[in-house]
Amino acid sequence: MVLVLTGVCLVCAALLGGAYVITKDPIAKADKEKTVKALSEVLPAFDTVSEEPLEAGGCNYYVAQKDGAVVGYAIESKTGGFGGELTVMVGIDAKTGFIWNTAPLKHGETPGLGAKCEDANGKFRTQWQGLNPAEHAFEVKKDIDAITASTITSKAYTKCVTQALEAYKLIMEEPSNE
Image (cartoon, rainbow, N blue to C red; front, side, top):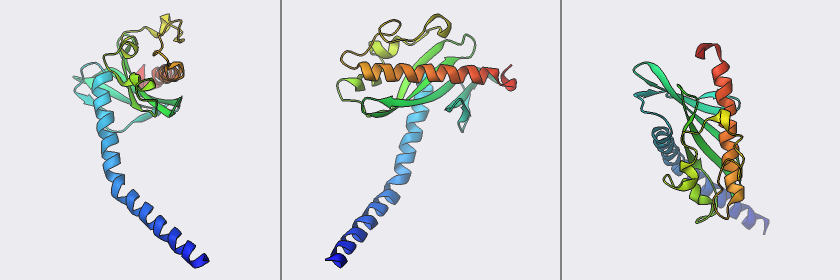
């Protein structure tokens, strides 16, 4: 009995290991493509963007330039949502410091409810565009309209944006950005 159970466990472990090896590269490629797409959504027009992310305040970020001048920062922020980890990319205009746009990178939110945060033309996502962080506290129901029946997702998304803005402040404090 012990030998049979050990054999079954070894076969299952080998199958899982093989599946990981086979899917590792395609998953990494898909994640990279999603990041590139999000960069184009959340940033003002640019001709170059940093290849590898930099780090500030626990958030990864990318620097976008046009004709050699910095035009924006794309900051990845993570927090717990209703269905697991929620990762949001927040684009910030370098000239004004205003939010250019936001885009969810990963989430496990409920389809039809919290997953509405993916709708690029939906009211929830478009309300972030052009907001001045100095004029808003970014609280759901006060400054931000929640996704109907998805308060937890809305609060998590708002927390991601707030964390990204805190990281942006740290980026601006770096001597190379003055």
